[in-house]
Length: 452
Image (cartoon, rainbow, N blue to C red; front, top):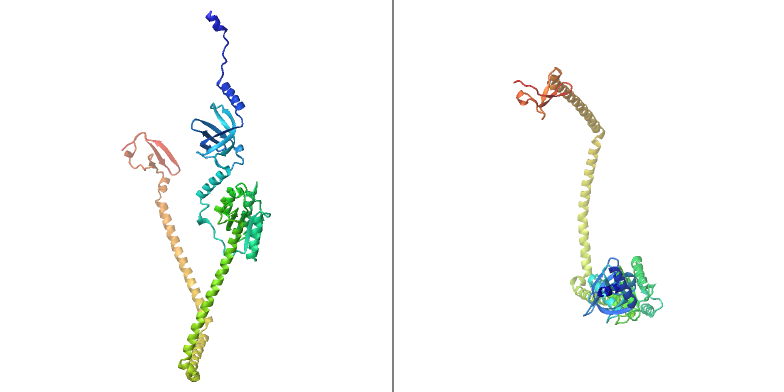
């Protein structure tokens, strides 16, 4: 009876691992969509593809998260280990490992705004690269004649800057490059303006300004591309963004930071005021020096006027004239004697030159050269003939003593395998291969018999 009951029970369904994982995936995807999860980020890493993988945990549990690159569009900060974050997304199962994970749609830092966190992260990174160092900042020109202005053409900042420069620096050449100072594409326009001035060299100093606003309004000046464009500019940049309490990344990278746009214009005018003050100081110093010199020279004139020479100038003048006449009378005979001596020397030299016959001298030298050439040719011909006769004698002796002559008479030269000449039968053994050199050609042979 018990056996019959056991056979009547329904059979249990058996799942494969893949089917079970798929069932769980569908269950999670159906019930956990568009959820918010808060926790601490850990094991954060970015793959070469741009996807970000991290773990979200608290004191009791942890869950894996995947933040694909397309969903990261518009995210200003970078997730880091230890950061408290709030993720929004859906739960599914990664079937290859059988793990459930959150597919993140958006990520926000918990406790701090995303923009503030992005600002701090970029500030730390650029500061570590040295973009804020005072050593790389360029000094402002002493007397700029051309000023480049990068700002919105319709804001209050451009009116304040133009008003200050026109009132205090009327002969300055001001070039405005209009850009958007907030919203999409504003950072790219600012970078384009900085590169334009740096490439064209149309300004001695650049003012990068805009009025105040929220962190979101000023965010274009916190973009990394703007910071690097300011650092790469070959022209000094003054940043005057927002109010006095506002700080942007552009302020830290710029060569000079101004608290407001008006303060930025004042900085440029200040260099002109300093120059004018320096010129005025030099003028006053020059006046004082001239007064001192005049007083000193006046005192010297009074001292000289009290001397005997100034009391009797006519007598001194007469004595100097008489002394000049005496020297002139003594100088004239000496000059005439010198002139006569020079004339005699010139006449003698002229006579010697005329007596010297260049044509005869050149003819004698030419004849001498011809005789020397003839003698040299004869000696060379005689020496060549002697050398040729000696060479012919030596060639004849060498030919007579050549071993090839001996071979012509029927003799032969035998050598062993190493090329050594055989002079004794003891140098070869029966069975050795030897080479016999005849008058014409060679013969290879094997020793069959030898006699002492």
